[in-house]
Structures are given as C-alpha cells and as structure tokens.
Image (tube, rainbow, N blue to C red):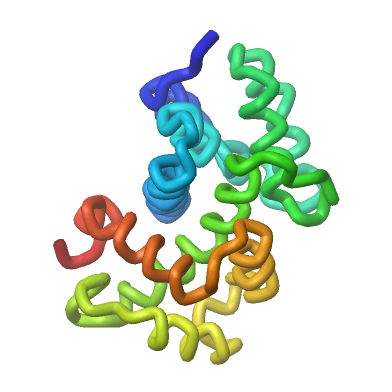
Amino acid sequence: MEPTRQQAWDTLTKYTKSESLLRHALAVEASTAAYARKLGGDEELWRVAALLHDFDYEMHPTLDKHPQDGAPILREEGYPEEVVETVLSHAEHLGLPRDTPLKKALFACDELSGFVHACALVRPTGLDGLEPKSVRKKLKQPSFAAGVHREDVYKGAEELGVELDDHIATVVEALKPIASELGLPA
C-alpha cells in the first residue's frame, strides 16, 4: 500500500480529538513536507509519517507507551514499515537510529514546529516577521513553552545538517500557508 495523506489524516483523526494535537500534527506535516521538497524526498510519504508521528498520544501519553504501543495499530492499518519505523524513530527515548533523511527531518521538525507555533501565538502578527533571532531568544527562556525539549531542537538541526537559524526560517516559512489552520493570523 502506498499511503496517502488523506489516509494518514483519517487515521490521525480517528485516534486524536485534541485540537492542539491536531494542530501540532499539521505544523509538523508542513515543516517535514518543506524538507521533502528541499531534500528530494517523497513528499506524500513524508506528510504521512509526519501526520502520524503522534497519532497515538491521546491513548498513550507516557514514554513507556508512546509511540511504541501505536506501532502495531499502524501495521494493522496497513502502513508500510518505513512509516512505522520513522514514527518510532522520532521518540528519543527509544534510541532508534535516524538513518534516513525522512527520519532526521521528522525528528528535527517535531519540537521546533511546536515551539515556532508557540512563538507565533504570543505575537500580534503571528508568523509574519518572526525572525530566527527571536525564536532563539525564546529558546533560552525555560519558562516559555516549557514542554518543548530544547535539546531535541538543537540535536534535530545538527542531525539534519542545517544551521539552526536556517532550520527556524524553513519552519516559519512552512507554517505560513497553514497559519489560519493553526489558529494564527493569516
């Protein structure tokens, strides 16, 4: 089966009802898709993996279950092993190798997409005019978006082989077309 974005969205919304988790999935999808275009990846496949990376989080919100307990569900639904392994590899606690551009991009985009979204939420202009310098400054404030693992943001850019400022700029640009879906000024 060649999974489609629509199938992934259907799977995601079957298991995820939280608006914030759905928005997070959309943000990670947009950012990961931007890297598919930059790196010559299969954009549809990369979108599928990104949409599904946290599909089981409402059912399994703890590290001893997420995302590993979601993997059998993805297999049952017919997703290829490449998607399942990519979803599993985004979880730092599992220690799985991120040995493909897709795995590296998903990991790199996960925490940063959420953080950029949080930065945009507190700005009257949202993503418009959001500069990497401002995002880096917020990263140094532990109380801001405290749930975001800063070390994963830095490690993700490093594993992907991009400068942090370039990575931030890519994510900001990727989110702009879906700003209204993310609850941000368009």
